[in-house]
Length: 137
Image (tube, rainbow, N blue to C red):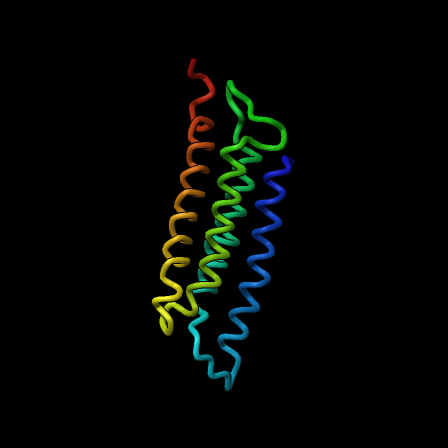
């Protein structure tokens, strides 16, 4: 399994673990949080866990085609990993405070969206050439 795939899958499992912890804290009986943690939970589960597991496995399993990438992953695939994770971390930090301190958290929040979009775009650019039929020349 390529190194990058291992990083995606291990990161996904960490997001699952911490996402469940965030959910437990936000739904703990008698807790009166002044910050909203459910959007953080959903992003950790959907983009952090599910999406990264899918990305890691697809980078591992889809054939490389005519132009095989390096064993440890191409630069654009690593950029996808770092941009997606940096965007998720920015979102986890900024989103709970968006409702109370919008003026302080709007820039990191918007930046997180842009980094996540860039990460997804880089992943699509990496995977797209691998989706050609094998008999096509």
